[in-house]
Length: 297
Image: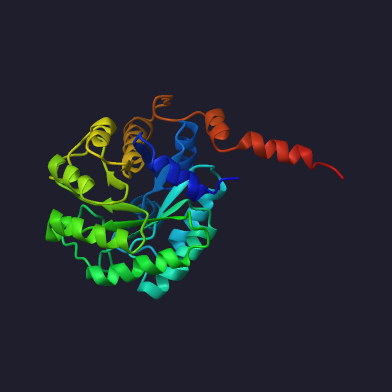
């Protein structure tokens, strides 16, 4: 059977751009799989915010991140790309981080060149470690994997603090060190995205939003537009976290206003998923079958 990493490589090297919704918990990973996607990216920010209750500023530990990734792999057949932040230390620690995420069932693992504690790629105040230090982390990651097809994704955040040319220089160094896939974060124009895609030797991933644009950040582009300028994959890390938050805000507003404030009995199927639909999504039928199969004895 083809390994998860090899499947991921085939998809990202195909002519069609690879689309990766961001996932962070059991609900989101099951919904993405149910929707027919083959791959997803685990949003480090989404995991930090939902599990820790804090913004993506390095609060979440390696073990918390790893355990969450393992659970998502256990309940899904998606090819998952995990986010290992900066590798939780130096090149030596990267060795153990890669081994752990590969064993946890990931298809790919992303490591970035920010200083620790890191911050979300679109936040102000980012700083990067020297490129030479990141090269050693990449080499350690490549050497650590047991399956040569386990995908190492090297991300640079250098475009913001140092400019797009420095981001390109770094990605070429990381590719030379053995990284399989490149990831350039927080590119601020279509021209910058095209320039990076043209000047790196490995498949390029960029991230996109879904209309969240009250600030200057990566321009909104369709998958086809990205494919046409040479991008191999696009990730939507905030797609489901922000949608879930908006849904919860809307439901709480109605609950507080009408149920608590006006003492009403409210039925709003537009605000909530039904009990049966929820159970179907979360694998109740499979659990019933297991229970029935091993009943008695």
